[in-house]
Length: 67
Image 1: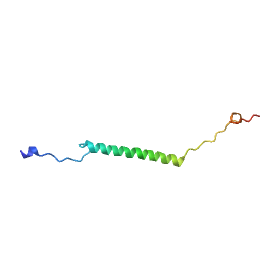
Image 2 (image 1 turned 120 degrees about the vertical axis):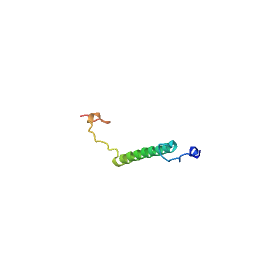
Image 3 (image 1 turned 90 degrees about the vertical axis):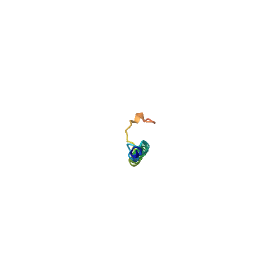
Image 4 (image 1 turned 120 degrees about the horizontal axis):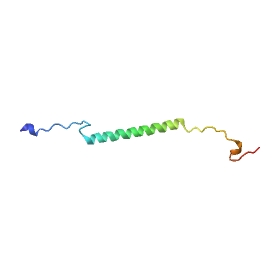
């Protein structure tokens, strides 16, 4: 009789406890997204936007110069 009433101990395994696993996966996903955003922002800040120098014909400028 005493063997029937014995309940196994609750393990803290990620497979058996869905509350702990969902919390863990939420924090991992938040950390991953933040690290990607911060990494991209730092890369963009370090490289910056470099404007290319483009040759424009003198007749198609804002103030055109005609010959």
